[in-house]
Amino acid sequence: MIARSGHQALAAAGVAPGEVVPMALFCALGHVLCSPDGRFHGLGDVALAREGRSRRVVMSAPVFEGVLQTVAASDLIALFPRDLAERRAQSSGITVYAPPVTIPPPLLCMIWRRKHSGDPAHIWLRGIVREILAPLGGAAGGPAPT
Picture 1 (spheres, rainbow, N blue to C red):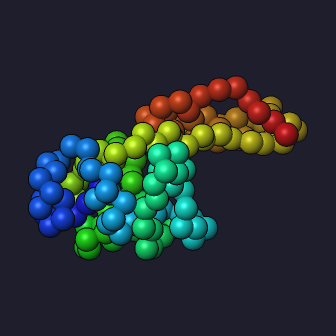
Picture 2 (picture 1 turned 30 degrees about the horizontal axis):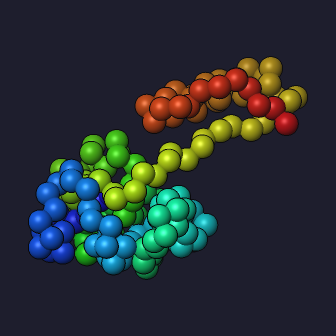
């Protein structure tokens, strides 16, 4: 979870960087959601629903950079990929915290038509995508042609 460095509500609650944000505070604060299609519901909401809780999503942004910039310039918070948050924290004016629920990572996969399985350019492109996603973990697996 990310918040603007010096976020008053988190400081007032005594939550230090890296610590778990109390559930009640996490749910009460306004959230920004990364959603390419403009939805206001995501994996975090599914995890919270399992705990019988919900959050207040007040804005969605289509890309992570938009979420990052919004959080850095406001009192909104966001669930954000940990690796990316830690890399960008110092230069972006955000602080990284732990959310009060475990949020499973999204399933990332590639799908292509069987007729492209042997195409050299397509094989190259799939390899590049695997290489880019490898640092996120779990980006592997064999072909899944349609």
